[in-house]
Image (cartoon, rainbow, N blue to C red; front, side, top):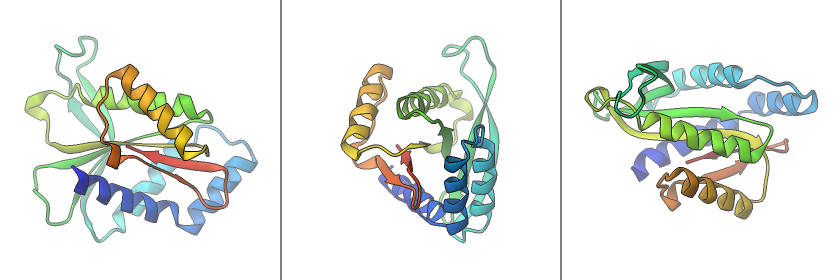
Length: 179
């Protein structure tokens, strides 16, 4: 689990260190552009395609839902699944992405996505691990950890303390969080 987190954290660090991504976030912040989550997913898709350590990836991957856990839907889409080179061919890392101009709303949405993915039908579950990425205004790391742990408790989500990061996006007042 920790190895998957470290791999995802490294990918995200490299992604957010790209100058053109930082420039776009600076513009998004300066010109209050909204609804840019799909843009972020497209940019991340292009980034994944160029990564030598990623042997396979797919966006908006459909999974069957366990009807005992969610009676109102049969399928859900996970934003990304990908596999690290030299890892098991039939197991993937899942990544859900959220963006919000409010820190608490972003973290809440990330927890909701974590709960959503837990409803994948057992017979269709080929996920090694699942992580959520949120992009939101920068906040003090201690404050962020308090918010994350409060929502984890409210949603009854068990998080690994050594698998949570929040980093400011250079040249912006935005940050990304992953857990």
